[in-house]
Amino acid sequence: MAGRKVKQAASAEAPAARGAVVGYARTSTVEQEAGLEAQRRDLAATGCGRVFAEQASSIGKRDQLAAALDYLREGDVLVVTKPDRLARSVADLLGTVAKLEAKGVSLRVLSMGGQSLDTSTPTGKLMLTVLGGVAEFERALMLERQREGIAKAKGEGKYKGRKPTARAKADDVQRLRAAGMTPTDIATKLGIGRASVYRVLQIANGNAASCPSSGPR
Image 1 (cartoon, one colour):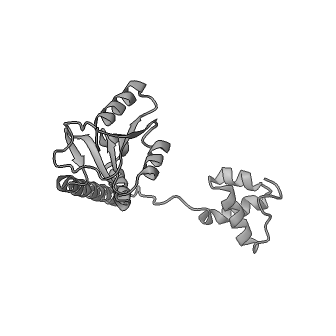
Image 2: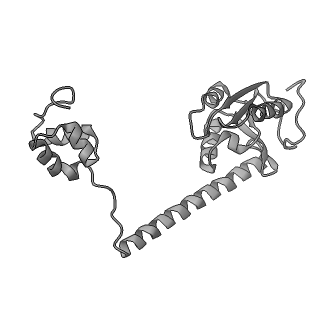
Image 3: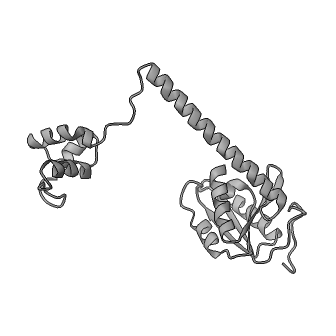
């Protein structure tokens, strides 16, 4: 955009933005404010007219990221200094890129393993394709290890499968209820939810059991 200096580290093949250039900066809650300010400076030097910034964990609620995604319009560019400022994993990054592409917005990462990434360029799209392949490969490996672990546990007689559900404990629920125990105490003793206890009792009594709002708790 006119009058804005573009950081030299940005990809030389990146086309001029048709819309607004918007930045997003984030540090975790334990990081210092200086880290956030450094990101703001880098984003401003790249030409970001507006920067959404916050101190929040990557696995927690990120209100400013949500605000940035809502603010962006077709033709805009979202800029971040590094991929981990935007996403918690490769899969998360690809998911965010998909949301941006659906809105006609491109993503620019200033430093990604020493190089910049711009999803509006052929090179950037290639890098995303490679990342997608890596993510799929990692998931396949994880599932394979999981299957191997289950097979090994079964062979050693250690595999127990899923924990029993409330219905699997229906007989215990009814026995304890008949003994005078309250639904809350039954839930605690059996390690299931109180709502599950009421559900079992209602089924057993033909939906005649007391609802959670009445009777002993």
